[in-house]
Every structure is written in structure tokens, then in C-alpha cells.
Image (cartoon, rainbow over all chains, first blue to last red; front, side, top):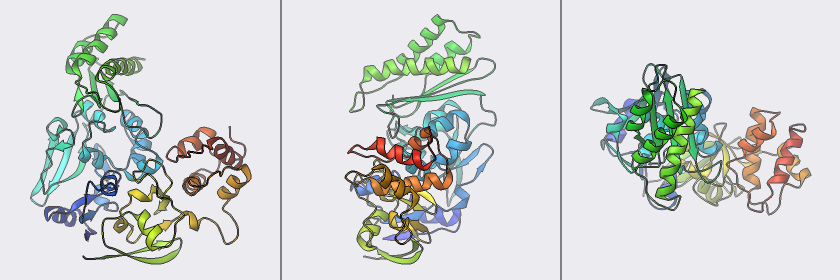
Length: 264
Length: 156
């Protein structure tokens, strides 16, 4: 096999341009490899590449681990980080890997959708920044070019002070989400709702957002209507983890619960 | 097929492995380095029985590509005791009867060593959270938890 140990991001991008597969935490790629679904004979090893581990202001490097986000991230992203895998997985797995894998159940992705984050991409040709909804195209499908690498994620300069994440699954630790959700609410009432595991990509419940954002002090009826709209907007499927009906129901319940936490 | 020569520090000893494929560090430890203490079970990071310290970070060695260990410090369960003396974590498990079939034990030892090195007086909740990535199917969680509560000085 062929392995590149890059000294710089430029070295890494050159290797990716020549066909190397980026290896960061390995928590997704090695599962695929161990089960014979991938055979990465040409890899570029990124774990110790400092340029990807940067975290400056609103720019999170792709190599920032869940462990670090758990302890230092914005509230709802830190809450999401704490539910990723186990301590072992969080020590190795990175936000860049979560974005690149683009699983519908990626725990970190609803936060990125809720705050309208941009995905930072680079290749030897240059860099570009894509809004999250132009990057995530389908189940494990993204707009990443064949010679490109995810270098980070850019959050907006101002994040809403009230922001909550929660996830429903069959157990507390080591669980893939049945539904996960982020709700944020700004001072003027502007509300954002993003959900995971209920569509091919992370999604926003925009009609529910619009309805509740104009209500300064939501009543029980408003909250019920908000939950109903969220349940209407998701497009879940039935699979081995849950049913379409349960996911639809749980989406509304979860979004309402998180909104109530934001309103406290 | 081209081999990659990977040099790392294994339990304090400079070691070299010839890696031919994108295999896991776990496979190299067990099959090339003669260290079968780290167990191979789920191969997807679910069970924690392959836990090792990679550059002082607790990881599942089944999810570390062996070539990524180049230049790294690796500590496995074999490196935890000092000569004939068990590590305090091992001694605590022994005293509490926290070993049944023993398959999960190496992973629990490494995860607990990591916990106690970072936090010598963990609470019961902190112990549970630190061991959330290690499965015991016997199932002996009660005794394992008591072992580490005792080691922490009667954590509650």
C-alpha cells in the first residue's frame, strides 16, 4: 500500500489530488475496511496535521475531535458531541469525518444546519466554501470533488444564545440516532429547527420555524402547532432502527421539548 | 505488494512492523507484535475490548489504521503492570472480583487506567461515562463499577 505522512496541508492536498484517501480518526473508514466494504490502499494520514486541528473563532478545523468539541464547543454542538459513540470514538473521530461521511444520522450535522454553517473545502486548485445545504446532497452523498478535502466548517459570527440538542435512540451510550434535533432561538424570537435521521440529509423544518418565530410568548396551542408542523415536514423512512411513523411523531415531540428548554 | 515500514514506541520499546495492507493496529499488535491482550471482537468500535492508548489518547485499536501508528507511543494492557506488580486498576478489579470470563477485562483495564490518570477521584457517574465504550456480556458491570468506586476512595 501507499501512505503519505504530510508535513503540510499543501502536501495532503497534493496526495488527495493524486487519489489518496484522507484518513483522520478512522472511526468510519476502518469499520468499512474491517468489514471488506473499503480497501484504502492509498491513504494520506491526517491525525497529526496541525493545520486541520485549528479552532480559531468561528472556524473549526476538520481535524477537531468530538472530545474537544464536547468540552469547548458551542452549547448544542457540545451536547451533540457528548452523544457521539463512546469516549474511545470521541477521542478519535472528527467533525470533518462526520461531515464527509454524510450519514443521515450524523450527530453533528443538525447543528450545522440550524446555524447555517458553511463547509470549507480545498484542493491543489484552490479553496471554496459551500453552504451546508449545497454540500449535503443525499445519503452519504456530498458535493465534495474527487480532488477535494474538507478542511473545516465555518460557523456564523454570532450564534443564538439559546440552543439545545437532543437525540432519541435505543440506549444512552454508543447509539445511532433514531431522531436527533437542534433548536435555537434568538432574542427577537427567530427560531431554527434542524433534524437528523429523518431525511436523506440533515433538514430544517422551515414552516415550523416561520410559524413560531413570530410568536413572542408561545402558548400550549402554539407549541402543539409547532410540533405538528415539524412532524409534517420530516420525510423519514422505516428501517431496522425505527419506523416512519415513530420518527415522524418523535420529531415533533423532540423539537417541542427543545424549544421549551430554549424558552425557559 | 509494497510494504510500509511502521516504527513506533510500544509499551516503552521501539518496535517495527511491516504493514502490507490497510489493516488495523489491533491486528498488528496481535498477529505481528505477539501481544494478544487487546481483544478482537466487534471490529467496529462498539465493544472497547481492543482499547489502547495511542499518544496518551484512549482509542479502539481496531479503528486505528496500523500505518497511522508511525512515530506514535502505544500502550497496551501488557504495558500496564510493573514486573510482578499489577497496576492499581488491575489490583482493584482483582480484589472486587470484577473479572468473570475475562474477555472484556483488558479493554476495561486500559479505559480505567486512562480515567484514573486524568481523574484520580472520579464519581460513580464519571466512572460509568468513562466506561460507556466497554461492553461486558457476562455481565459483570456491578463488580466492575464497585472495583473502581473502591479505587476512587468510595465514590458515590
